[in-house]
Image 1: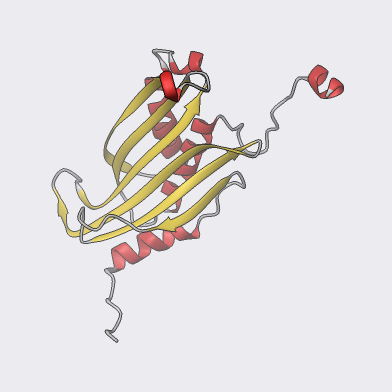
Image 2: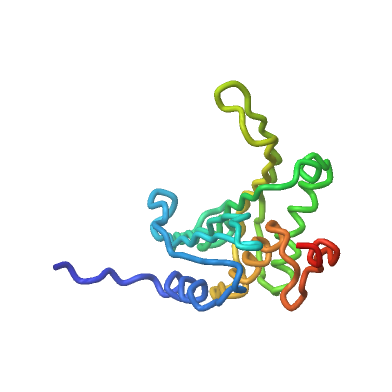
Length: 190
C-alpha cells in the first residue's frame, strides 16, 4: 500500500476550514468527489436546502488549489460555486432578479468578512413549459448562480458561512432566528 500523499499546508488548512463550519439546520452538506483536471488539488461539497420539508435549492462548492498559482485567480486558492433553485414564475420573470441574486453572494461574503478578490460569475433565469408527451405540471422557473472568487486568507470558514447564506437567500429562507408568518386564516381552517 502506498503511503498517503502529503497535502500542501495551505490546501489542508483551507479544507479544514470548510469542514469545520456547521450550517443552519435546513442546509445539508456532503463531501463529494471534486473535479481533478482543474487544479492539482481539489475538494468539493454539495448542498441541499429544505424549506417546509421540500428540497428547493441545491449547490456545489469546489475548492481548487494550485501551489504555483494562476494569474487569473490572483492567488493559489480558488472557490467555485454553482447554485440552482426553483422559483415562482412571476419572480423568475423579474428583470432585476439577476442583479439581486448577485448581491446575495457579495453581501454574504462581506457580512461574513470573508475577504476575496477576482470575483466573477453569471446569474441565469430560465422558464420551462411542457408540451405533447411531456405535458404535465405547469410552467417551471429556475435561477442558476455560477461564480468563482479567490479568498484572501487561508481560513475558509467564513467563506463557507457566506456560501450557506447565499443558499438560504436563494431558497427564500428567513434569516436565522426569524420565523416566517403563515396565513392564520388558513392555519385555523386547515
